[in-house]
Every structure is written in C-alpha cells, then in structure tokens.
Length: 372
Ligand SMILES: NC(=O)c1ccc[n+]([C@@H]2O[C@H](COP(=O)([O-])OP(=O)(O)OC[C@H]3O[C@@H](n4cnc5c(N)ncnc54)[C@H](OP(=O)(O)O)[C@@H]3O)[C@@H](O)[C@H]2O)c1
Picture (cartoon, rainbow, N blue to C red):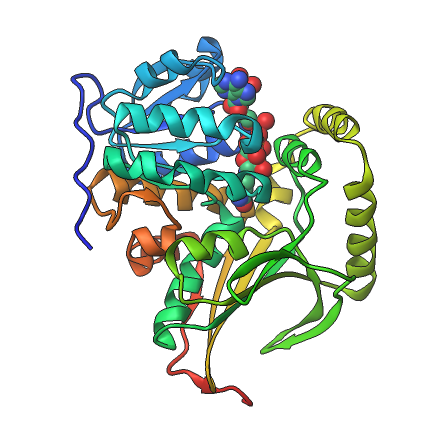
C-alpha cells in the first residue's frame, strides 16, 4: 500500500495536532499526552476561556469552533498535521467533524466507543479516500486496542477466518460524557459477523470464559469490531465481541441492556443529557481502572491470542489518540479512507511508545493448535 501524503500545512500552527473538545475530560487527557510527547498542538472548542485554561506549554494556537457550524470547523482544522476528536456522542456529532476534516484535508482519529456511530462512519470512506485523508474512528481504549490486537493476531495466523474479541474493564467509573454516549445508543443490540454478514446476536449469550489467568463470564457486548474489522480484513467471516464480567454482573448487564433496548429513544436522550452532568471521576479512582483486551484469531487448526493490558482507561485513551495523531501527522498512514488503526498504521509503531505509559502487549510466540 502507498503511504498517504500528509495534508498541506497552513502558515499558523502548521503540522500541529488539533484537539477538538480539549476542554472535556478525555480532551484534557489528550492534551496531557501531547505535552508529555513535547508535540505542538492546537486546542479547539467552543469556549475561549476554558480553552485558555487547558492550553499548556506546547500549545501553539487556540481556535473556536462548535461542531454545529461546519464552516467554522473546516477553518479551525486548516493546516493541522492531524486531528483528535473527543466530542461525543459521536452518533450525534461525529459526521460533521469527519466531513470537515476531509474538506480541510486533515487526517484524523476519534475516541468513540459507539457501535451506532461506527456502523455509519464507513459510508464516509469514499470521500475520505478521494481527498487522500485517513480517518481512524473508534480509537479509544475500548475498540482501539482491540483493533491493534486483531491486526497482529490476524498476521500471526496469516489471515484469520474468525476473530473473537474479549474485553475486561476493571474498576471502571464512566464520566458524564461516556454515560451520555452509552445511554443514547441504548437501543442498539450487540452484533456479530457470521458467514461474512453483520447480524444481531440473539439470546442472553452468557458463557464461561477461562483464558490464561483470566476467569469470568462472557456476555455479548455492543463492540464495533463485527463492523469495523470488515473494513480492513475482508477475509474474516466471523467476528464476536464479548465483555467479560463476574456471573452476577454478567446477568445484570444482559438483563439491563435488554430493558434499555426497549426504552423509547426520547427517554434515552433525556437520560443521556441528565447523566452528562455526573461529576468527573476523581484522579485516584480514574488511575485505578484497568482495561484488558484479548483477541483470538483462528485459521483452520491454528489459533493466535494477542493480549493488551492498560492502566487508567481515560488516561491511556488520551495517550493512544495522541500517539496515533502524531504518526498520522508524520505521513505514516498506509491508506486513505475510513479504517481501523491496526490496518492504517503499523500496530507496533502505535503500541511501542505506549509501553512507557504502562501498556503491556503479549504476542503469541507462534500460533497454537486450536485444542491447546
Ligand atoms: N473509547 C474509549 O475508550 C473512550 C474513552 C474516553 C472517552 N470516550 C468517549 O469520548 C467522549 C467524550 O467523553 P468525555 O468524558 O471527555 O466528555 P466531556 O468531559 O463531557 O467532554 C466533551 C467535550 O466535547 C465538547 N463539546 C460538546 N458539545 C460541543 C459542541 N457542540 N461543539 C464543540 N465542542 C463540544 C465539550 O466542550 P465544553 O467544555 O465547551 O462543554 C467538551 O470539551 C464520549 O463519547 C466518551 O464515550 C471514549
């Protein structure tokens, strides 16, 4: 694949990383990560005073834009090396930002964890491809690490026929922004890829999961991988995504999400708006959280497992988005269009710099026989 040319820089802040939603909980984590990387960045948002408060030493510009104003967005993205979008819910706001980035000719990533958004964004792939812009949605802790691990596991078995994603979230306390995004897409049911077709998963689907040192109960999760992995790994015919919990949690989750799916959309929107006012998790609470993704790729009798474990779910999301944007700004994208991070960039080039932030990667020494 040819490398995509980096976007043409403008005069001010040429080549810097834009952080849209820099004043938010996750946006501030992206800013902290860019400060640690000593990377020039531009804070973008709708409140000048709040932007000034989050701008640190390496901030080279502040730009005002509301996601409801497309022409201001395009102007705010002019000349950036790459963009990180942290403004959710992405099913509401994501499309305007992708369209503006494509118009401005700026590569971008976002931290979305919404199946509702990721099921739609692929339709913008052609426009991004024609503009030579690389768009990497779903690149937070949730989905981003699975996309990277899936790419590595697929390579290990030289082309998987099935990929199974398992996620553990330990001591996770969501922010108001996350609760808003989750609740508003509450009517979406978990999907799977079966015989190359995206289908709804049926039944409670709770099953015991024993994997290395990990023990729990898998429950179907609204992971986006059944949709997103098809963008880049068309040979994969089967994809599942499970959250792994204790048995009472798994039962509560399965029943709770089914009740949510029956609620009218206006009730979910209202619940989301109210939940968005939840207090931010305290720093020590946030830092205790942990995320684990184990991705299995299967090809015939061969099976390869790749595990990524990360501390501080929100902090590491900021690091992952920042490192991805830096690689995009350096012209490292292998493809234009809408893709997963694992396919558009070298997965190890993304994961290696995150080791110093506590991310542990376990690669299979070689694929196992399926019965092992
Ligand atoms: N994938 C993952 O693992 C992961 C991890 C972390 C977060 N997330 C997702 O990231 C999203 C943000 O979460 P959060 O906790 O950071 O939320 P947050 O603290 O509420 O921040 C939201 C940001 O969006 C900005 N914003 C809202 N409406 C806007 C508009 N119309 N125009 C411009 N900016 C606007 C806000 O600006 P103001 O300050 O002006 O209000 C704020 O900067 C959620 O969807 C969450 O689920 C995903």
